[in-house]
Structure formats: structure tokens, C-alpha cells
Image (cartoon, rainbow, N blue to C red; front, side, top):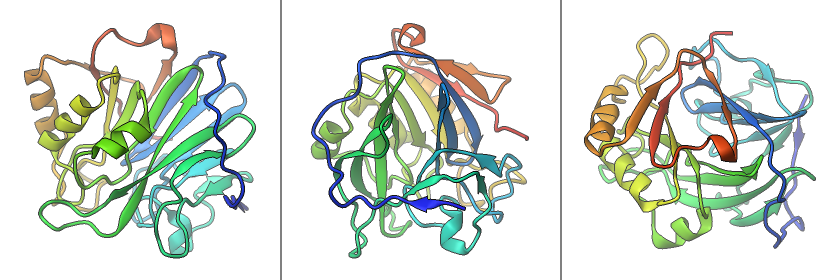
Length: 256
């Protein structure tokens, strides 16, 4: 079961709530993350079974969908059991397939900014539009860039706001590549934690055109950024725990 959020009339103009709390962030593979604050759980971009990472199904209260491709929206391909419980499914597009840009109150505990971007890369791969999501949980500003195809425009930078934790594609071909990902990170000067996603992993990513993670990590180190490789797919994020400068956090995907 799931519920579809109808966005008409829900636009809000206020900012994030002022409280702070720890947020547990878990990487489920490809572009899928779960963020949990207390009893509230947000999932972003669950994949269909065609993308054979082992972590799904998992429960969530809210599911944010950046676009309707098989590796980001199982419902678009008839798979209704990849997220369990009774999740609120956020589909950010209108009937003309454009993002309903702006700040939206999704629940009483989650408000998100919807920012439209192209999926099409400079080389012409990718297709259509994606919705980049930016939101505050636990006093931290998170952003998930979906299958971003180009570096950010000034309008997009302003709409995303003071992002501190950034989930960003780095594998290229269908999205920005490693060098463009570095450029995007520099476009967002408040970023402190970078979580790379959408890169090739043998046996789990069906698209061999996508580059593995190594190239991005090499460029990140060349920038002087600290690269931390974790042994757990879950990390705890809070305002007090954020590093003072950019760090790349490499999380293994959850295996159950």
C-alpha cells in the first residue's frame, strides 16, 4: 500500500523548524538512501528489482521520487512492494512532466524544496527532467540531486539553499561525471559532507557505461578533501558532528 501526495494548495513560505536531533542516514545502494529522525523515516529513490541491490524492501513513512526511471521509481514499473508499510509517495511532476518547483509542506515534520533540473548530459545521454530535493532534518540541510545531467545554474544553487549534506551522482554517462560532480560541490560552498551515488558496482549496477567510484575519489583527494570510507552503511548526522570542511563519506550499501 502507498498514498500519493497531492501537492495542489500545499505550498508554504516558512523555513525549517529550529530544533536539532540526530539523523541516521543509511545507503541502500545506487541512488537510494533512508534518513531517520526519531520515529520519522524518509526514503529517496528506491529501485526496482531490475537493479539487484539486496536492501529492499524496507519501510518508510515518506518516499521522495526524483524521476520515473526503473532505478529510481519501482511504482512506475508496476512494483508496489519495494517499500513496505503505508508510505506517502511524493511524485513532484505536473501533467506536462515539469517539476512543481517551490517549497512544499509534505507532512507536519517534513518540508522540502523541489528544484527542476535536466537529466540530459552534455554528451546527450539521459532523458527528461529530474527533481532535486532539499530539506532540513535534525537541524541539518540535506540535498539529493537525482540524476542531475549538468552543473547547476545560479537559480538552482539559490533554490537548494545552504546544503550541508549532499547526495550526488558521480558515475557519468547518464548523469554528471566525476569532474562535473567536483564542480557542483564547489558551487555549493556550505557543503560539508558529500555522499557519492549512482556509480558502477559489479554485479549490482546493470549499466556498465557508468564509471565506478574510484575516479571521483581520486579527483576529491586531489582537491584536498578528506575521503572517509566507512564499514557500515549507516552514519549519524547532526549539526555538531559535521566536519569543518568538505569530506567525502563512502558508505557500503546495506546488504539486508
